[in-house]
Image (cartoon, rainbow, N blue to C red; front, side, top):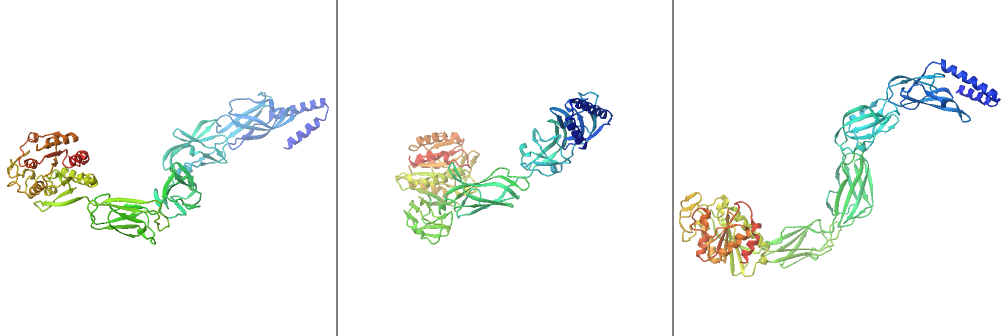
Length: 638
């Protein structure tokens, strides 16, 4: 600086002299500077990666300076320039910058006017090793939303840095002696492993891979528990909600919205994040019978992890007390019963329940206990309708009032059950009777115990008739015997407990004790005498007493329909076969089965003048009712 001050002072004095003196003075200066430039030794310059590499150096007419060689890998720039008018007279500083990747060691760079040898100045640049990367941070799980800070041994303004994961890259800008990689741009997934490379670049070209290793991302933060569960109906009047996380959180958006169709309205609330908990205090009472949704987004844990996806939780504010469950169905109630209505919340005890709950159709008594109401009746008529009504105004223990009326209709049992006989082992043989008309249709199943599908379809038919009892024509009586051979069904045997085929024990004209079967002749398979078996007697007596318009029996298996050819059984049998897509074996049952048939129920019924058809279901153990529902109902109305 002292030299610069002296030269500046001389120039000021020279400017005050005459033109001739000024020229002479300039010439002297020029000669002196050439002298020093030629005889001075190389000037050593230590190259810096951290900032501009500059050195104090006096240069005359700096605008004329050029490098004497072009392959040094560096460029120079004269700085701190002094002008005389518009002419750059002197510069006091020379700065160097790399134009290609610096090589560790010494590099010489000479500068002279016009790049010649006169007044040439040589600089020896000493190039140190580039800053070293500390990859310790990559030995631990990394966050996917925060910039990843990687330490350098020194500031580096020469190179750029980049993080690579597969084909994706993230820039790593410098700040002080560290780089900050934009991990979020890599779109990584939490809790996963990735092969990561940290590379060094110069002029956008990769020059070195500094780190190459497998790196794990942080495990996601999750909601561990909350004061309200997904889909919950809330019956009280909450003022706060809490969410507990599995990690300490530092920020996040927690929003509560009211849902009304497609419309969403944010509910004013105060959210506090403290440790692992978020507390949401609502400013006013929530609307009843309304759906709400919490959403948590942009959550960040202290370790830098976040939610795997935005968290959503829906809940509903209840209305007043409403019936959540009834212990009976719409049909089939016994003639004496206590019906229990269970509410979705406790009902306030200071209310007279009979002012809100009423019944009609059957005399009842009404009582209550906490969240249940009991409706009791005794000795009701068969097939009697019972209606239960609750009017608005019922209040819960939380003071929430029911606004909507509620009603329920049910019916007592519409059939009677009678024991028509007992099996060999004493099991009851039951008949279910619907209606009281003068024309009877009889249905039977389970005559062969190895064919339970016939029993199944009859039980399903009983349930269907119970549900549709009011539709049975007034002139009809429907009788169903689902298990003619209960012992055989229990043992999965074609025969009864006496090893008799019940369907070969009826007193038809062709009864015989020894019967033909698909496996050969069975001695005494038809019984010791016609009607020797209690099951046969029970069904024969019932049939004789009823004298049904039609009898329909179910067997398995074969997708077949037969008829005893009494009355209009043939046309009925063909109608049934056509409806369910079965093949008719009417008039050729023995040819179809492959053996002679004696003492059969349908043959005996035909001898009594009773039309009867026989259905061979497709399988022995499956349920086939819904495929037969329509045609069975037509049989009722035949």
